[in-house]
Length: 268
Image (cartoon, rainbow, N blue to C red; front, side, top):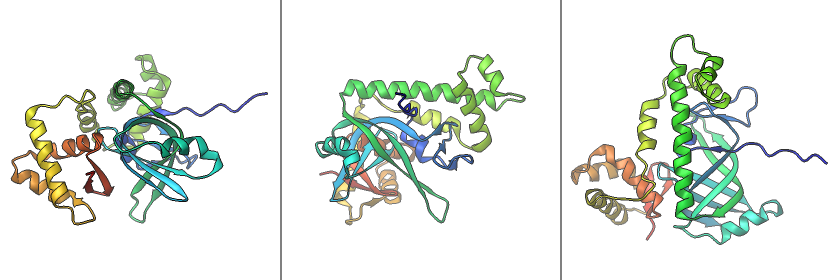
């Protein structure tokens, strides 16, 4: 008997998914990301920063140090094993997940993504670091191929002849077609700044403490606005470019979570 082959899952960071804004013209089940990946299923790892469960579904937010993935699992027999695992996790736990992407586009053409998990595992810090470094390697390879793709008269075949895989080459050409104005250098700098080892300098620790204390003490019930956090950081002489890094780090450590777009709450 021939069983259907499970579709490939892509290792990506949360920001690559968040910045995606293109649906495949041939099949709307697939997303085309800024790095040109044509994806429907993804694999990721990170720290649980939020969990909510009711009679119908379980929602979990997972931070990878750069942003958040949002898991939504419906309570039915099909997801029984996944839901059993999710029921047993807590904020601060480290997990890996594989699942299919679900998306919603509002009237302003802004995409919101969630992942319907198919496999969930509690993992060690070493396994999380492995996911991080491997995903960083995959992303850097794609960015290198994209840089070549933007040169004159470059095709998929030329990229393959330069040593890139068929997937890397095709992804680079899609990135050139759909994300011509995307800040690829900024994305490279951002993913290269992720601290997979959790080594924090004293100066950085002071910054984290200031931001965390502000969020704890200034939450009006709906979370602290991002713009207000930026102002508080500026008053504390924290460089504005550090704010996103600090928020991502605090999220990855399970200290805060993004309760809604650009609003943050502390996990006390």
